[in-house]
Length: 221
Image (cartoon, rainbow, N blue to C red; front, side):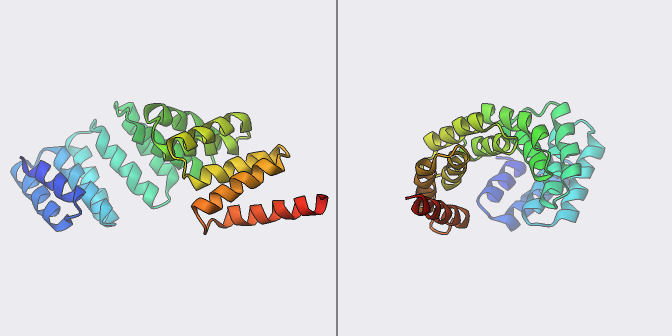
């Protein structure tokens, strides 16, 4: 097992000091390999040392301007800093250089979503959920973007798909409740809000919505 492989293994195990040691040794042995700088950048980002991480990603790009994962790393770094404009720029660059994984589509979509660019987010999140159809969180975020762009029928189908993947997804139930409410289906709304609260007792939005709908039902009866 190479120093790089050992470093990645230690990072996955949460042994960060050991990972840093192996990544340092890998750089010392092969100082012109951009992958070692990217791995160290990923470790530093995980440790919230963003300024150092940025330097390592940029060093990797100096060594190879076409290394897609360095741009993806910078995208993640700027995303963590809520700099969604720069995050999008680097995610797009990573994609242009051939990074076609679900994660880059997902993160690009999320950076658009958090920057209130829901319509722009849609195709990226759609592609992410096509590549990761069994990831309930990826599929859910696509449904949320659909709901925020008022495509409620399609959003309903996607939230229902989320529940086939993870029946204990409280936010999917909550959003299905909101769609029921929008369609004047009070009983359906109560049912979904109630399930959301059963799954997550501290789900404030579902709790408040359930209380309001129950109040409306009592007033009408």
